Length: 141
Image (cartoon, rainbow, N blue to C red; front, side, top):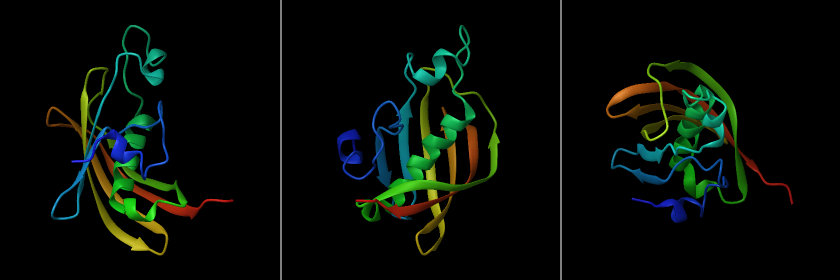
């Protein structure tokens, strides 16, 4: 199991946009990542005051960072950029204090394009799922 310091060795994101805290890749090649939603996250302070809910776009970002774990060895010298989101569905709300558990798998690779499927669960309940596409783009010097 990788901790946040190990994740920072390959994932370019940093707080407050680093949205995975642990990561592991199982024997079947699936990534399992976690992130606990804190009470004072920038994205819940205004969404919505008195009734904080994690925005869907942030749930997608948590899933996307989990997908990037699958290609961690190829990330150095590159940035990861969304290329598409398909069939994204939101099933249950995510709130401060919740532990997000993401399972991600690589479905296909075409050159520097990666096609993944991911789901985000809290306490075993499906909260979000979808197909995410991202590209590894060489960093400009």
